[in-house]
Picture (spheres, rainbow, N blue to C red):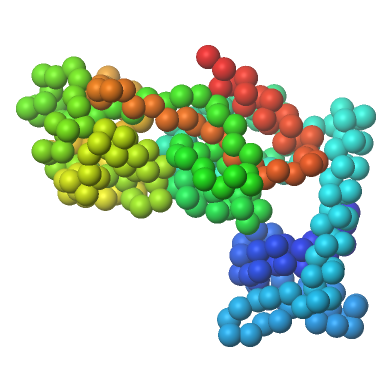
Length: 297
């Protein structure tokens, strides 16, 4: 409904990147450039300076951005109000989830939601916690669900549920006779870790420090990019690891891995992350309400 040229300009101005704007809008970069040039021709002035591979707003661009922000906020308020009056729940929402949540939590959550609200189209982007937070900050997704700490105080963070992390070892490992283990004991064994930027890795490193231990003493043998690859490496006898309890249900049933509780216990929250917007689409409200019900014990 709003002017397409203005929508494209606003996205480029917010991200200060034609490439990121094209990805966010599901357009080609030439198409984004064309829409911005159309708006510049309409105003008969440049809205961006493009120098040394950097994109910055001109004075006219900054003024246009301020008005565009007001326009889209009013448009969002109008759309939300009308849909509440008519009872219409539809639209497109783009979600982002960190790897563990996307693989082990979202399928059951989203299957129930889509059955209840078939007219809401959901899109999903998967990354580690750091990547999801960056997408929220740059307005590339509407809602993020992450498993690690979020340090940006300008974002709204709402805890969904607690997740327990446990040690996993191969079935025939010398530690498989133990029911619990301290981090100090675990330092003596090759450790398989998630990659930098992973929420699971950050939580583990914070836990190591909280036990008064030097995180540099963790005997890192492998860094892998997903829970499945970590479990596979542990099963192959390449080391031990710490993973979310929700990721190992199948392996415990198959008796291919052995679980050991950490002492003291290690928990972390699964959390919703979003921008502090005054108005949100009715579809977003419904998704949040449904998800809160899913999160409740």
